[in-house]
Image (cartoon, rainbow, N blue to C red; front, side):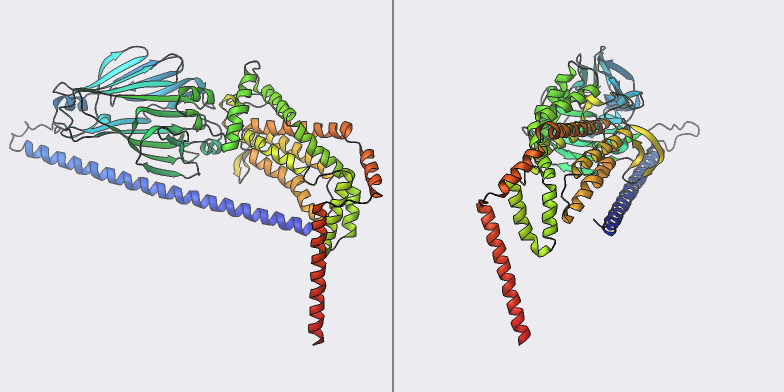
Length: 630
């Protein structure tokens, strides 16, 4: 490839990258401006409503106490609820209680009878601080229904009915004897907060035309991991239809704001962070739902990753006692743990498309877990897993490298043909001569490409496995502190487009190993000018692209690709050293050179096409000559 062509390609690449980065910045800016504008408008509307309510309350109080002697007037607030017990629940202060097991410590507030905070005990944030997936006061759970007026449990303080170390029961009492009960409990060794909401004696309080209760859950999901970009990439909301295996995903396209309404039944939904999630599951299914999610910026002062909200409905059938069993899973996105929890929870782990996910679920994850039963170091596990994968793929690897080595042997002959047929109009003759040469050498033109293509699903499956593998989270190896995120040997202090704000040593070593492997193979490439651009791509462009891609991804992934390249180089050397005899290939070429060539049907068709092309060109020349004579 000419120097001018290389410079041209480089300039085009720089322009495209710069334009893509500029568009991304402008898009995010517009999204953020729209979000801020909507938030300001909503805040102003809420403030206006509060001002109107306050003015109304002052007017009512003035009217109620008008005519009283000066000095005897009171500033008593007007009643909000007609039910005296509801009014008392609205006025009294909240209390806080804790239940816990070996996995979770959950604080509850009696205001709304809801979780106030949730600590996941076995794990920590990237900075080694306690991992509160529900931070104090950053969750709001509300049940809405109608009696003779609208009731929202978030505004009402429940009475404590029963409390143990692992369970708590709270009740909201009505003056005619009915009550709403919220019972929560933890089972040993479980990340699931069990919940049963019961409406007892409410058939005379809730009108008969009420057919549903509304449940709102809002949660500010915190920043937990080191890399904001990766954490955001693998965070979203999911939900599942009853009886379906496939889950529905919100926020997978990188949008800042997501809002969706579902009018059909739902069995569960989840607020999913990269490595942790909060599920809400209904045994009776939700009759409908509306979900929204807003991502916060990386420098958010409250360290909030995304604000999630769900509004779901459950059917209401009047009765003396109506129970609603719910489960809240608050824990890791560990494939085996989620699978044991039931109802397709494990499908939220992002393992790739249909083929890649099947390879990960049926082969990679079981094999990875089996190795971990005997080996503690995940760096050693990745090494052994890489060796085993390369051994399994060795027949394909041998066929591919054998074909490439043979191509290297006949490279001088190929170069002679390129010199013999340099003109574009001789392309058909050159192709015919190449096919004849390949046949004499016993080389299949697709012998090197097809085995490599068959290995691509494995490579892609590993590309999806490592960034989402919970097992690697906060597991160190050599200089790497956490194999689930990038290893930084140089923090720039500023952000470079595409590269980020750091330099990963493993991604750099991976790119170098990829370059060395391409360098070894490039010696076998043809000197055909048409192959020079391919040589440039494999030798320079691909390693550089992979370095930029992996610099912000899991260091475990870069480590795997580096090991894979090193083992591949070693396999190449072994094949060339012990399995490929160049003298035999040359002898076969010399022996077959004197033999009459038995043309295959493909070669016959190729020659026929060549003759037809030459005849058409001669006919075209004759017609042009006739026109010129005229």
